Image (cartoon, rainbow, N blue to C red; front, side):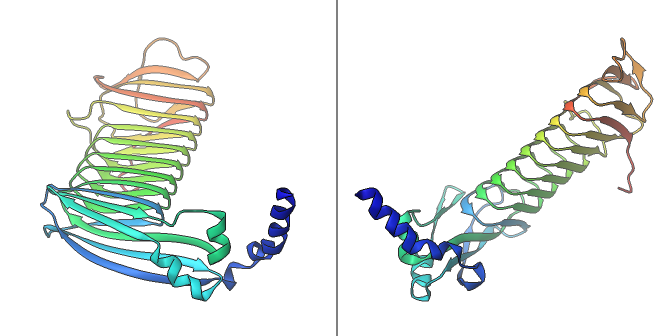
Length: 304
C-alpha cells in the first residue's frame, strides 16, 4: 500500500522536475561585512556551492561580500528559501572563520518550496600576509596576489592562483589547476583535470590521475628541494632554464621521452621510456612519471 501511495505522489509532482530552468524565479541577497584582522592572521572559509574570489589588501581587515542565490518555481517561497541560507562568522585571536549553512536537503522541502538550486558566492579582501584556507564542494576558487600561505580544496571546480610568495596547496577532484608566479612550495593535485604552473621559483609536487601537466620554472635557487611530477594518463611538459643543474629520472609505460636540454645519460635508455641523467653539475632531484603519455623537457621560453 505504501509503495502505491509513493508512486501516486511521484506521478503528481513529476511535471515539476521537467520544467525549464527559465521558468524558475531567481532571488538574491548580498551581505557585506568588515572584520579587523592583523596582517599575519588566518582566514578559513567553508562553502557548499558557489565561486570564491580572494584579493589581497594593504589594510588590517577582511572585507567580505557574500551573495546568496536561490532559485524556486514558487514566488511566495523564494525569499523564505533564501532566508534559510545562513552565513556564520567567528573572529577570535586573529582567526576569522566563515561557514556557510545551506538548507537541509530533503525530498519534502523540494516539494513544498519547489526549490531548484541555491548557492553562495564570496568575494574577500584579506591582509597581504594572511594565511587562507578554503574548502568548497561545487565551485571555483581564484586568488589574486598574496604573500601568505594558501590551502585550497574543491570537489568540483577549478583553482586559479596568481602571484603568491608563500606556499600553495591546491586540490580538486574534478577541475583544472593553474598557478602563476609562485615563489614558495607548490603542492597541486587533481583527479580529473589539467595542471599548469608558470613563472614559479620553488619546489613543486604535481599529480593528476587523468590529465596533462605543464610546469614552468623560471628560476632555481638553493631553497628548491625537489621537483616531482606524475600523471596516470596524460602528457608531462617541463620547461627549465638552460643553465640548470639537476639529476633527472623520467619514465613512461606508454609514450616517449624527449629533452631539449643537454643531458648526460646515466645507464641505458629503455626504448625511450625510461631515462636517468644529469643536467649541468647535477644536484636538484627531478622526477617525472606518467603511465600513459609523453614526457618532454623543454628550454624555458621567458616569453610564454
